Amino acid sequence: MKKNCLQCVRHWAGLFVWCVLALSSTVQAKLGIEYQTPLGNPDGAVADPASRKKYLIQRDQFAISYNDAKRQANWVSWSYSLCDDGPVKRTDAWAVEEMLPPKFSKIGTASFGPGWDRGHMCPSADRRSSRDDNRRTFRMSNVIPQASQNNRRVWSNFENYSRSLAANGDEVLVITGPAQFTGERLANKMAIPSSLWKIVVQIPDAASPTPANERITEDARVIAILTPNVNTGLGPWQNYITSIEEIEKVTGLDFLTDIDPSVATYLKNVVDTGRGPNTPTVVTTFEPVLGAPGTTVNISGYNFGDSPEVWFNGAAAPVTAVGSNNLTVTVPEDATSGPITITGPDGTDTSHEDFTVSDTGDTPHPGMAVATRTRGADKLLAVTGGTRNVRHHVPWSRLRTDPPAL
Image (cartoon, rainbow, N blue to C red):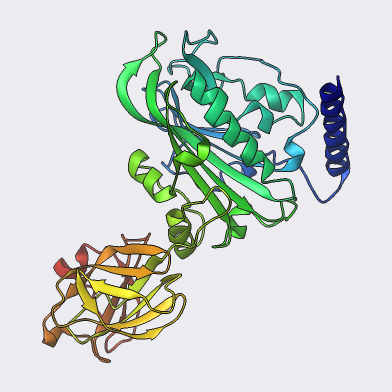
């Protein structure tokens, strides 16, 4: 009896807080199409019936990239604030997705059979400010074949934790989906994923009029998990923490495309501790991108520390100047073309791009053009300098075959 009374008190206390916030002009539920893809459109989904494997569904409650071949979402994205957690109870309003084009396969509402749950991607509990908002989460496009124990233990616990991040007025940005399909299918022809992933980004001030993607900085907390879609041998969600970069490798998706590229590169490398983010060493850019031994190279990134170690494709490089997020190094005599690797106080990172070691005669000088390339934008090359001192953007692949005229 005492336990039930305590639960009742907590429920009504929480409801009172919600009502006060909901009536406040400073905090609002994150509902509206404009709020639902703050972490980008990672596969370029479009609302075109010809795009059967990446069909975009945009609702006020969440956005979906739907894959007709797999008969489920590639990803589901939304934003959450404390005011989304209203007084509405779970509606269980399972319904066929009406926003799919006529020739798409539409999954019925029947249960998936023993061992499988109709697993929500955007949870019912994230949309409780109105009955209509909650009902939308029961559209079958928002559902995947999820192992029951994964859904009810690991996934549910992480959902609860994610909502708790909004307790102090913060905004919680979420994107999630299935991965690693093996060819198995349910009786209704839905493909069965062997893993599930989720990315949560916590940023301050859910009441801010500034769009969420513009408020994401390197100080944002990022939690990424990749869990096996199984019913046995599961641990707590903290056991499955990984990085956005690792999820990109598994899924082929490209996240954080609508934020500052350097910040995106850094956040993609963060591996949360379960209590708060770590501070990984990350290489974002370097310039120039080619030069002979002895060339000075400026490297930008994050958390290099006081005594970083730098290698050019395995050859140790002398560091001549150190800042927390900037280094000046010299290309070593035994360097060969390849990536730059830096070890700092919280780990090691290797550049996505290669540094090209050239002959002595190719070393850039004030009268020559200098090429630079930014990590995360490796299809663009900036060429500056030369006698005309102009700036060009050309495909990186043209550097050797068709250099721009300066």
